[in-house]
Image (tube, rainbow, N blue to C red; front, side, top):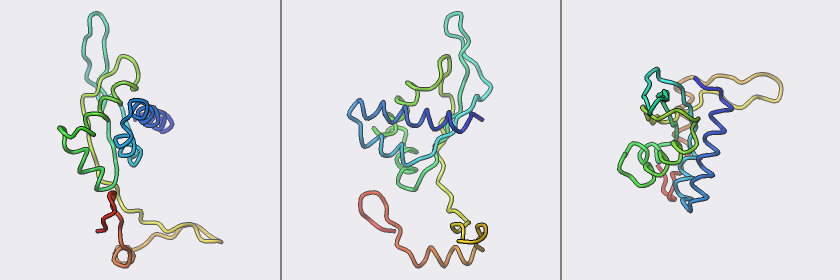
Length: 140
């Protein structure tokens, strides 16, 4: 795995690349996700140089998940192009994985004490009492 701060730098750099190119919608989708990347172990020769294969994982909400799982979607293509532009030298993206974001099982830290884990039934109760807003103004 890469250093979490390096993941954040790549994410921010790719978003900046998109904004600089006028692709604000793609930048918005990318920034709604978390990013992790690591060397997958494979290599590719480019002339006399050896380039390392990377596995890139983006994790986000359902709206981002749906877009990023469509490899022909213009936003997905723009995000992949931006990531390839800012990833470390002598690397290439071999694996691109999209994951749905997990619901946090912890409530915020209480005034005096540490976070308390929620049971599954408590979490379902919280979710059933809230309207979840999805990008585009709809609710689930």
